[in-house]
Length: 127
Length: 303
Image 1 (tube, rainbow over the protein chains, first blue to last red):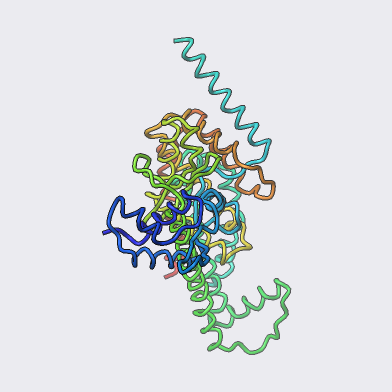
Image 2 (cartoon, each protein chain N blue to C red; image 1 turned 45 degrees about the horizontal axis):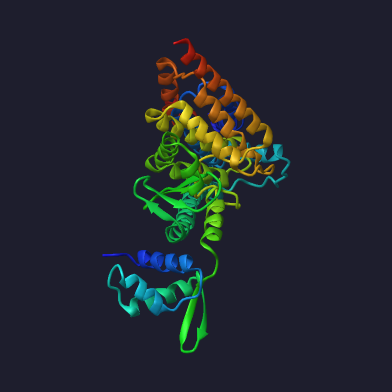
């Protein structure tokens, strides 16, 4: 049993890859190359994505054309910055691997690394 | 005997003097888990101390009432000294400690619930935008800076940028993922929520501020140690540097900024573990400290 989120991801994935507005019919046909999925299911989920603010739509003839609000890269950058705590008040939610540093701290880090690199190199040379 | 002055003194010592003693000690970075436990023990002890101080100051007895009025005087508050009303005092004696307890529990619940909501929204978006890598057990986001973080809790995720996957060696990548895995496995978000809750209630107490900052750093060290069990020091340190150096420097966020440097020096420095005797006595102290306010409030000798 696939989750709703999987189908959402499949739809977004196609729209991002095609990089042009598309109809639900086009998306269904493309997904159907790999697995059967009902038109109404895809239409429902596409509507959910539109409702959540992930997609824009415009009418062409009788069909709706859907396109992503922002590029995958733009979403990824916003998420990363969020996750890394660059937007305020996310401290409690997520733990970033390293936090921001000043230039001096970076220089000190570099120096600390170089020193051990040299020591390791010497140890190898000695042995 | 009136325990109020002793209790107030003890609570003040824990809240205002103890953090500086602990900050100056050099063992916490050698035994980060133990140190985190000590910070928590101090926080619990302070909360008990504050609650019991309030109770004993408000106790419905003439001399204790005088004690409270005296204290208010000392704080610059002039209260009209009327007849002590035992009923109001008794209510205060129960109400104030209860309020402290409720505030702490409510604040913890608030932090946990809010963080969970933020994380689940974030996770939903990450699942849409990123690609799950079964090999890395992580979600890869297209982002041109090497970076990684985790979404702990139920249905956790490790999020890593594709730049990190490209630029880091497999060994370095493994160390980073192991570090994030340690945060998730150790449920570090709950530990952080505890100190956040304590900080929201006792914002003006140095202990609260330092416990919050130090716990965050100590949790990173615990995760570093976990990564070092299966990965080399060089791999972890280099990955740490690569990620830290790529980030845009930001002056305003100086509070935690230095932690990367402290961690890197620790990872590269000689491995020192705390002496078993020291470890044992600190652990015993961590267990005893929360109970001390009770001993001060009701000395066993006096029945």
